[in-house]
Image (tube, rainbow, N blue to C red; front, side, top):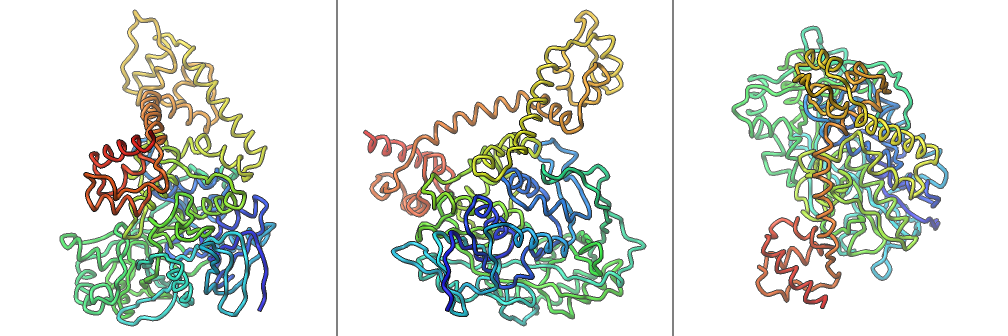
Length: 621
């Protein structure tokens, strides 16, 4: 038996585990990363892409906190797209297609070359507890590793069970072992575990696909970057392709539902509502004749395509028949079948906002173990858990982001307050303050935290401050410079905007830029002002949204007042007369830290909050 001591142990080498290990190591603390397979650290288990609606926001937020997922995405991107271009900047969402192999190699390389991190391929079988405090980990080969804090990022491997048709077998991913004993250990710790399900699509041989009649789905020539550290994008883009299922496809699936583990009761875990299997789609949307399928390259040199939109756990022969009924896939060969995986997760209501468990001190959970889906949600939780594990060691106040500060704040608050019963996926619609949680102002909102915790270099901070100074100066100049109507009107007319009446003489550039049809390039044509693209875009957005942002800021100030009304940790809800038994139960379970969090608990009414406020004030007196 080997016994070693570290500051922090991270269990799991997925997207949450990578961030949870890197953050403490970069803050100067020793980290042991335990994983079932070193070669699969950073594996993209599902589709080979990063970002997307709201997920792109999470990636950029992790990046300015000092995380790695944005850099990894930029290094390995094979296609770039900005989603929601037709809508306002608040919901623009970057997304990349990525080279699956290159991503994994780059992730392993950064971990292996980061000071203070040791990586071991061992199965964590038990969390060692002493007086309700996590002090170490036992592994299946008999080793013990001691630490001041433990971060669990087990993904789908916690008691994982794979399904292909009616055949089931143990595993966390196809051809990979599961972790079984750790689930029992967590239950003994007093944690309540549930069961979730997710799945993935078949991979197919690239040379067996007929692309000649399929719609080409190209990336954008105008590149963005996920990371502020990425200076230039030189990666050549690869196209994706679009095809569709059809009535024949749906008939094949419908006839085979008696062999589907989803519809025969074999799978008991709850699946993701917003990323359903193709079986679920054809049952839930029986009136639709077809569904989109995106054919995505697995990598630059890969011989495989990933079929986005065709997640399935049907038997192999049905998968093959289903695929061959789709245009372009008539002679397709499956290289890896689609499958479903069930796994244990920790009900996240059992966590503090720091992601530390309430039952066991110094034990943190991040990623799919908390009931989320997606690489981006996992990475966001990983960096927060890693930072908070360090702050716990230092006996410092936890790092908790508010809902009006970041999508990360929305994500974690939703998890610990609403206690998800299905895989949680981030959407822009879940962020009530999304107007100020844009991708363009992410550094303004969060980079100072990265500096505070030593994850952002001084030169990087100075570069941000210089950009911020240029933006502020440009906006001030826009307000000062008045353009005469004879100069502005020809451009306004060209842009179908109302012209400035001659009797007014002119208008400030600031007011002109606020018009919907005017861009910063038009301001350059009207004046001597010149902008770099990134500065001009920021100036334009902040000018156009100036009034809305002020209203949001006023609303947030009111929320801060409600947040000041703290609820004592030992507050007794059962003694409040007038509260329903359901309200008492939910408040006692969640243990909200303040009145604002209490108001977001499902089933808690405004009258419950009023009663709670009265009793808090009474106790305070």
